[in-house]
Length: 433
Image (cartoon, rainbow, N blue to C red; front, side):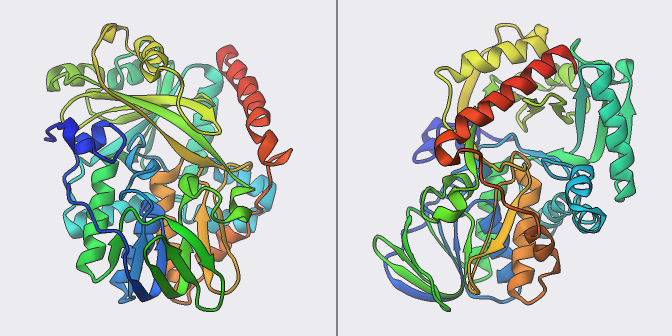
């Protein structure tokens, strides 16, 4: 079980994950000129998955990370393997046609499978546990889950079980829910330990990773040149995988996406008996609200609880105050429980809530904007990018067909417009519509 050590948080945000990470070594900053088959910007899940799959195929790969491995959403998230995309397959079919829906639907459960395969193949220690629950507050949300079960079964997920009011209370000891759905193909894990393990695998396969190596310039050509403050990489293919932490490095990507913050806490250690009184089978849980809450039991039997959205990124004045009201409403028996860690982090939102894949010329490829479904979809994205670089681009090109819409009013108005929409859906949540 993980042992917490706040000193390990140095240069990472102070979080439960940083304090319980298995790998405490720091990679060097780039301070030389290198050549590579592929250079990857960003050592989050998209970049790591890409680099790992390419390294397995024998490619010479260099990864440049502005901060530390898993510094962004990949090392701060709720740790849940949630299937499909932030907008589900039925929305894709309605908006983009049955042919594209079939292509993307066939891959909707692949991300979790990729993670499981990596954990098994490389014996990754990341507190992985099977199973996730979607929890419904009202009858309308249960109708949605019934439709979701039928939809997912059409695309091969037969590990789903609907839960009535009595059954969900057996799984989640909370008075809040009227029912739910158990997805045994879901699960949860320690996300930073997964990211760090993937980095070690990449290095064992000959790849190079440099931390504290922010990219300050890209020379776009048939063989892109990527510059940092003290070094550079010339490559055959450049992969841009910075997501919410890319900043303005690639303006055309920033214009069609928006960083959004979410907040997480972990309680003091509850002990196994008390933890299982809350969630007996230790499944992870997310509710069915538009602005949803998510939670799970960690490897050392704390409750990890997160939720909320701050549009444009950043955190509220008090994460603890914000999360406590939600947690205690879900689990009144934990009223007054001690919080030992509280942190926030940004994910990247798109207007369609669907990921953005594409190319910038012949030699630059990117994927971003998972809109809250990043743990699984990033791993799929990395595999698809790897395949595209190797000349098998069918899966990547299917995602690249999705249009990339700009936010109304551009970057100046994207936050207020999106906040107005979120307020509307928040009212719908409260009214049970």
